[in-house]
Picture 1 (cartoon, rainbow, N blue to C red):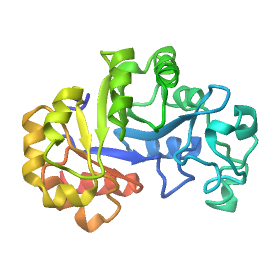
Picture 2 (picture 1 turned 90 degrees about the vertical axis):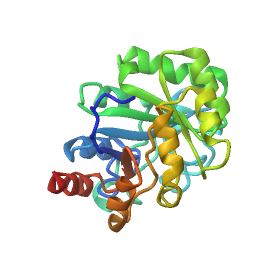
Picture 3 (picture 1 turned 180 degrees about the horizontal axis):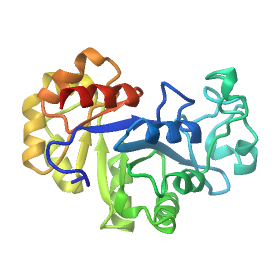
Length: 249
């Protein structure tokens, strides 16, 4: 499923070390690696001129000094925006990174990559993302995931060998069959669904599918999530999770 062996608790840095640096930026990813993340998670969208960029929202409004939807803006317009100052004045001048810049930073890192392709995403856009994973020689260290099953199918069409994951807003009666149909290695639901649905977690595990809940920021829940069968925790506090897991050894 994932490179690290059985018994590993995956420490997944949600949008990088998002508690320590602006989410989905190069400082957040560098901090995540330094803090012991075994997996670095980030979001990808594609600009009006076809450049994959790493940002969560449909617009630049929340995290940058600009305004507008990603697919309406060119890369040169997005590249000029400040993506750090709203987090802290200490990060003023930090930019929205291109996917290429993120992969260049992380290509020699020990962590695996959990790449969420945000919807809507066309087949050409999925191809563009996977082409860059191939170019930077990280395809075998990556898992492509999405909330949109159609995006997962497109990823399978483009690169059948690429590991895939399905994000969920909740477990339901179709979860296991859908995971099998899509051929995913990960099925990642909200924290509450793992806490209240250990039976579903076990069914998925028996089907060869790992479960990593998002977003596990309440440290008082970490033990219960692992006891419920989580293969790893997706959190903004990856440094704290590293310390916590080290103490449990």
